[in-house]
Image (tube, rainbow, N blue to C red):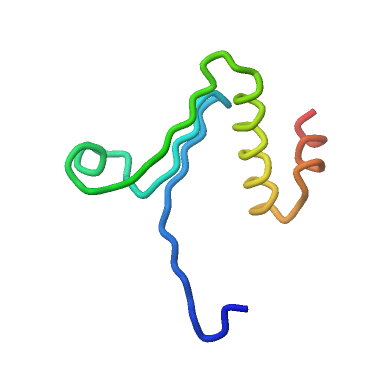
Length: 79
């Protein structure tokens, strides 16, 4: 367990049309993206159906977690 320790993670995530996933510490502004020492990783599907499915699965898993449901129940609701 965590015991007395508390870990605070301040991260950002953007998922656009299941085609692009961006996660990291940068704010989406010029200063964070160009001047500050921030770290981000981007994943672009670029026409690859496997990558697009992985991005969509990440979106569904996060939505389900925050809505208190399962990814399968979420998919059924959107079907």
